[in-house]
Figure 1: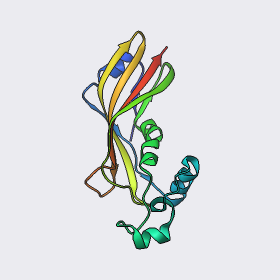
Figure 2 (figure 1 turned 30 degrees about the horizontal axis):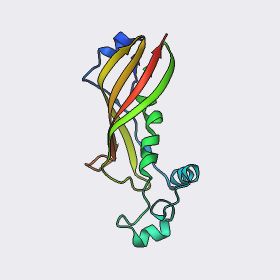
Figure 3 (figure 1 turned 60 degrees about the vertical axis):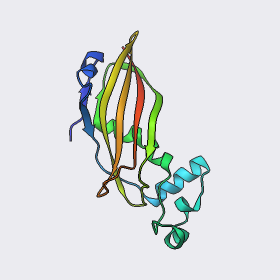
Length: 154
């Protein structure tokens, strides 16, 4: 898969209303879930105790933290697009975030992104990106949201 290359505000603007791309799949492992629990101090058993989850969880296995699935966005976004000629990228916000489906341990997820809008704020490009985190072989997405990035172009 090839990345979309964007070199300027005008390049970006040409993609309003269009799909920007789809990332590769990423497997969510128990080790990754445990490391996220360590980073966030969220040790709820549904995430970190495979033995208990096998017996007590309706999913019969652990699930990724919802915010873990959101936090892999930069990694997957980087597979979709290469933006050149900017000084700085700022995560500005997340709107309309909905977690639609739990991500079971060892599931594979990928990001689909489309550009909803872009606004020139005196040389700063405010982009609103509709994202969907898809789970391989599952109809309902793990999450959907509008993420807002500020690109400070040179």
